[in-house]
Amino acid sequence: MTAKILDGNALSAELRESLRQRAAELAAQGSKPGLAVILVGENPASQVYVRNKIKACEAVGVHSEKYEFPADTPPEKVLHKIAALNADPKIHGILVQLPLPPQFDEDEVLEAVSAEKDVDGFHAENVGLLAQGNPRFISCTPYGVMEMLSSEGISLRGMEAVIVGRSNIVGKPMALLLIGASATVTVCHSQTRDLAFHTRRADVLVAAVGKAKMITGDMVKPGAVVIDVGINRLPDGKLCGDVDFDSAKEVASLITPVPGGVGPMTITMLLANTIESADRAAGK
Ligand code: NDP
Image (cartoon, rainbow, N blue to C red):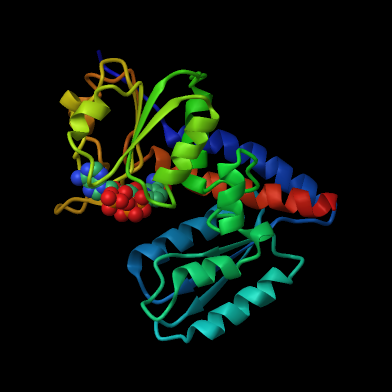
């Protein structure tokens, strides 16, 4: 069997077109959606992510503002900017690009963002709402994965879903969403005994680890849906996922590539969250 490839670029383009229309409607009503992005330090990967997010905003008609601070900025200065953005009616989403330099307490910064503008879905209030099955903002990467599954008409009810990785930004919210969709969910991590035992049971396998090609074809159940969240850089400079694409695609029924899979969907869902937030603010 050779798996169908789930093209995140194509699905993103489709979704961004409908987001562009919704953003234009809101702008016509005087509520143009606005996103503020805060970047501290000179991490090159973060600079690329921020640039891509700003570019994506421009393409769908979302107003964006970028605030850059040097790496040695005292945390109070960034917290002060967040407070100003919380009060700014032009801004519906605030994103603090992680990681932050060591003098910052990341939790403190994430909690400083108004829960109503927390388009990354990292604020404790939004994590709690998601855990209760009543989400306000869903973190962008797991939200993008759910959109990909839904675009293929996959019914998750009763399915065995296995997630490899338990981070706050991917693994845990992914587990909550899959539970919400009535899958039977297993979450694996670095202390899991016999990882392959679990992955081989998965009807839906989500890899979010950060280790190049660690999930090989022999760890995949025949016919499984394989979602690769990982982004790893190989010594030759190329990007690859956590799944060994070449061997897994011979076993799976559906697989996401890296690049061009989950990555573009993450930015698309950031736009969706910003527009949903502007929509909510306009309705108040
Ligand atoms: P983290 O480093 O925060 O989490 C990695 C998780 O993998 C941890 O839970 C860790 O377990 C687990 N893990 C590590 N080694 C193993 C192992 N040998 N077997 C099983 N589990 C293991 O990473 P993130 O969740 O932030 O990101 C994961 C990957 O996804 C990265 O490559 C990242 O770049 C990518 N990513 C991609 C995005 C996209 O848009 N496509 C967005 C966000 C992330 P433990 O908890 O025990 O340490």
